[in-house]
Length: 338
Image 1 (cartoon, helix red, strand yellow):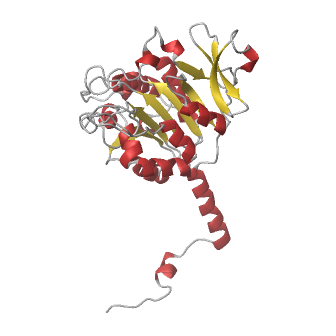
Image 2 (cartoon, helix red, strand yellow):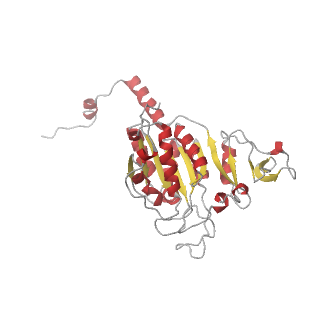
């Protein structure tokens, strides 16, 4: 339950550190969105902890006037798990990037989600390694030219939301760095969720991968390249909202259709955020055949890890009584050193 606090403002969550990202970096917009959102959560600053790994996104804790850790490459979810277990009353945020979370940190991210640890994991996906000068990352598109793939990457990219869904995350969403009106309520919903929440944020790197998401960010064309997933509403997109996503029941796959040409309004798929299979299909969509799905793709709450652990501890104490540390230390094979 949120505790009553004095009314806070964006300034209360802005540290005195100089924000140092490249000009035009999408991280600026994400930072401002979160700083502006914090007062709306009506939680004291001392209840907020931001934990990051290594990468451009991982500067984030320095710029938030809250508690925080700048940790080691890929291990932020593990350290965040320890923080949450030590003090379950804290709001614990993991700030990470596509390389930090899905390459060296893939195992740690997967198990934090599998365990349903009550963490808010925000993954900034710019499809490149920015801090280490532009090598291709686990999410880089096939053909990406970089210092480590000068002839173009031949690796098939990972889908961050697909990985999260596969790992069992009960809350999975996707948004865009500069779309504050969309990003803010998505993050707010992630915070309200009790358990592991995972939000992929499409983020522009103007130096090493500029314009990779222009199709969903350019207001002149974005309507044709993204579809907003809203629970209970039809998956429509396009400037005229005349295009939609239909489920082909013969192949159990999605297809793009146009109302009035090869589909009726009743044919359009209704988004059900509790449907895991549908969420997996939406997470996998991408250009040029499909629009990118943004919004809450999946939300199906389950008991959080911290709650399960505490319940287990209480049931054991009830069954076995309070422990005796002295008796434990003197049990079994023991000896006295004189």
